[in-house]
Amino acid sequence: MFNQRIKIRQLLESGTEGQEAVVMGWVRTFRNNQFIALNDGSTNQNLQIVAELGTLEDAFLKRITTGASLKAVGKLIPSPGKGQKWELKAEKVEILGDCDPEKYPLQPKKHSLEFLREIAHLRFRTNTFSAVFRVRHSLAFAIHQFYHERGFIYLHTPIITATDAEGAGETFRVTTLPFDGTPRRDDGSVNFTEDFFGRPTNLTVSGQLEGELAAMALSEIYTFGPTFRAENSNTARHLAEFWMIEPEMAFYDLEDNMNLAEEFIKYLIRFAIDNNREDLEFLAARLEEEEKQKPQSERSEWGLLEKLNFVLQNQFERITYTEAIDILLNSPAYKKKKFKYDVKWGIDLQSEHERWLVEKYFKKPVIVTNYPKQIKAFYMRQNDDGKTVAAMDILAPGIGEIVGGSQREERLEKLKERMREMHIPIKEMWWYLDTRRFGAVPHAGFGLGFERMVQFVTGMSNIRDAIAFPRTPKNAEF
Ligand code: ATP
Ligand code: MN
Image 1 (cartoon, helix red, strand yellow):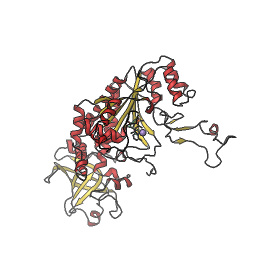
Image 2 (cartoon, helix red, strand yellow):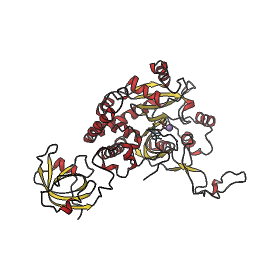
Image 3 (cartoon, protein in one colour):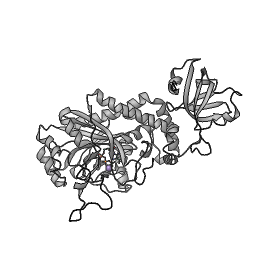
């Protein structure tokens, strides 16, 4: 059997003196023709492998280069060197895959995150990215655990749909029609009846509408899957393909919804702190270095772990949209004309406004509720004031919006009225409206952007560094 190896993390945690071990991994560094720092991705701690001087031939030693993969067999002994408890005294070293040091782009030195994005196929081999992806894994696992513990059903909603849930139109078309010789009707429009599905289809922007259908029978469901938005915004927090968690709950109002979202975010943070402490400490140190490069005024007041602990220990601030606008209008930033975008009741809060509220004013996550209905989706429940809807966005320090949700409009007539006003095709959505015809109940839900959550927990400032292979405008390499 080839794979009788032990992972380095396990060996370092529970190894015993004299234990015979087989390890496999990739060489990070090789010093003095004797000390190999081996990493296998289970932890950022390398295992030091010590070859007895003179036992390996020169030609073989030359093949032990940064990036090469190897198998080592030996005995675990206490390390006399600094910074590590154990090392492996090698009895046998076998190269599994050579790595030409002249051509290997990753050197044992600091590389910029921008450069690493260009070699995203190799960046998992850096301490930063292996830590990020271990934390991402933990968070994904914790999502299922959180909902499973609460009796929610994991629902897989379709990736290809014929609806644009938001009505925002920023979708990727899915078609098998040819570009040349597209079938057309007499009036020149494309004849989609000849397309694969016999109608226009696109990649989903959200699983919510289908999620609502299931919640009307299963009570509480959640989705966790990829979503696609063809928004042409090249920001540090937008991807064209991102993962979203969307719980949808029958018998919930807006407050229940907020409570669940806050509990959920805190659960994920707690899970990462409990299970990924070493990685978070590494990422905290990385972030501290990054912050030092910034001018004093732009530096964050907190370290990563301080921030996470603070969020855990404090209630999220809850304010209405109207209160948020008042606070902004009275802010020094507004009075000194520091905002690029104007502030008045009815505007969609811009990122600069959200960040000011969260980072400068409240200094903690903020839940903003009851937005003007004009700037929100048709399915949000109308409030009695006739102007606002029961929406809630959660804004996080350093990120901005991390959750968008609402109580849904369960009253058929009110829902149809909004759909007409917003030019949503009522006839095509017959199945959605059926839930309001057959035993409608008050219900609510939200969407948490997974990569923004990963950013928040890892402290990575660009969303491209929170997903393995980011899809952004003009970029789909790998
Ligand atoms: P934003 O205003 O930041 O563009 P949104 O209002 O379009 O967000 P929603 O439609 O409410 O966002 O989506 C729910 C959540 O999905 C957001 O709170 C955010 O965490 C995440 N999200 C939305 N768009 C993107 C994107 N392009 N890339 C990554 N995450 C996103
Ligand atoms: Mn958006």
